[in-house]
Image 1 (cartoon, rainbow, N blue to C red):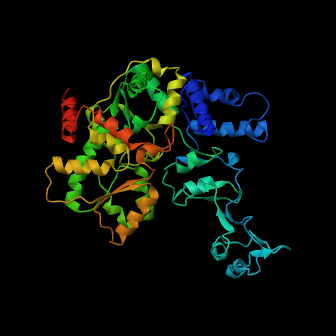
Image 2: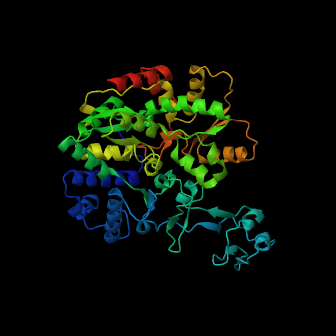
Image 3: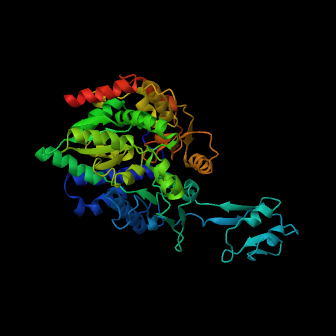
Length: 480
């Protein structure tokens, strides 16, 4: 059997989602929490934690998150305090490399008197006095003092995670951009994204029962790097078997965005992209003076959803992709009217398995055709390539595109800092919060090295070869 998940933590999350989905379909979720916990935690002996009681308590918290999470916390990313207690305390520590020298440069560098020495002259740091300034580490000639960080803190490149007084991780919602990097990197699964899988199941049931509306699935082009155990067309068949009326490519929205964004860029002379919600949120929170530089286009998800709802106002739309930040994006007033819910690829796999659908036995269906350029939005650099093509197709020749494609939030930070100081030679910043772009999103089934050639190959399979042809296809489809 092909391995679907990278780690046991991810598999545990999947099992909880799958069982929650099964009971939600059966309309007995509220009375089945204990039954779900028993399926996940079997027997009376712990397998993951110190005792069976803690193990069950943590699973109950996972069930809560799979059922929508805390209503009081507006963030789509939450810390499960009870699950976060096994990591060493972060901060500067003296390692075994300390030679017990007599120079004591570390002591001289510490303005707080936090450095002491034992009888062998080896240094120790008094955590009650240390302010984590790092001066001792810089002064040590042996590099024996190191700044130890928890995996979640290392994963969060915008420093939104710190330790609470309880020593559990805490998230600063004023900084968090919901990229989900911490979710995947936590070895104990103590940080999770809220799931809206129950909302989606309710829409499926309502759509099936009274036919009051059509339920559309809008699928991210990064699907090309997912579900390696089956073909993309079989996933499309599974979605229709679940109860979705049809499946539309978000890449069609990407084609529309590329055309519009190219025009806007040529008119304004400088833009930052608006496709990645985490990148947009990062600008708003950390570079507020550059908000006016963000493209006024909605993301491809919202753009195609808006188009669908203009065509079919009574429909419901669920976006399916690799992105936890999309769960935050649909709460925005500019997006809320168009997208009704979001599922990650992780959650889609759980939803399909909850209905015991064997995708490998299904026929290979097809997606509505976007262009090659719309599909390559899934990887870093794809948006810039698409904008270049859109300028060409619209015969905009009096503007010279000088893009910079930022692969990950750290590269985004550098580009934005240079732009804010007017020293960036580029006139278009393509920002992707995740490394490799959308194919590296936190909600992916697998998180290993991703090959952009895989996305490009998927793009080459597109029936429509130009952005103009793809948009013409959408227009003609609307008439019918």
